[in-house]
Length: 356
Ligand code: SP5
Ligand code: ZN
Image (cartoon, rainbow, N blue to C red):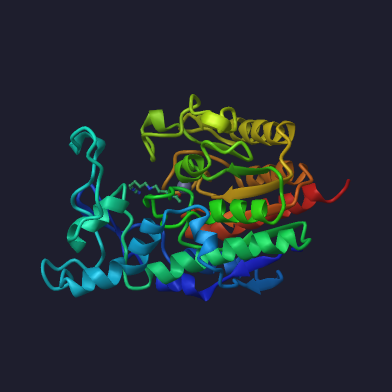
């Protein structure tokens, strides 16, 4: 494979060790083994170490309050003694600043108590913070931005093999196994590196609500996402509908294609094709692919039924746009097939980019 792979060992420091779902600590599927499986499958590629990036690369897409919180959340939790009493070895929120909580004109503060602070920034209970979560999340952004830098520097495409994933994280909140939005940071880097208009196309099985929301009013970052229909009962439940098309100056720059559970290659590839065509028509000069492979038939987190050949075909369609392309790993949870599916998509991109 020609596409360079950006890698950081620091991902291993993030061991969520489960997720709190429906109030119960369940095993969770966003495990360190994921990145190791992908790396093993791509062992013949050129590897680049993720380069540490300045705070600017985070602050381009996140509020300082979120960054400050995430970088200190574990130490504050530990110092508060919650590991011993009540016996919780990960940061878990308990109270949320729900819009319905507030009196008119009263805005949420950052709470004084470490126990309450988590809910100020988390939008679900599943996305646990442990001792190395911050270091790993930050390294994942480093990997995505390093991949963007390779592309700004002239590589036709680059792939960030990173975790934790990012596309559910908004400017000010984290959730859905995501803490910092790696793909958004890559898009911002392409923009600051001189690209006029970037398209982020998200093929993860879940709606990329964070990336959508970060760029919702930005006409120069087009966002397209194909995902399982949240209206059919799937995460992130509240966003990802076709009616969400951007706002303000970004009106028309967002596009969602929700698919019925059970959709396979035919419907999924048709959607990928429509999003790619739209990005070209709207004048995208570079592409970020939010590369989740959890739309695969065997994946435990989604009811879509895409095949290995489907991922290769999607890659080819994206490559045929002939744009400088940054690919950023998102979801994909079936350990036995994960690496192969990523390889199929990357090889498809390579085939599409190559002039016929
Ligand atoms: C990046 C990404 O793919 N995030 C996906 C987060 C979706 N998680 C939803 C989990 C809902 C509860 N999980 C139950 C798993 C049963 N196998
Ligand atoms: Zn997903």
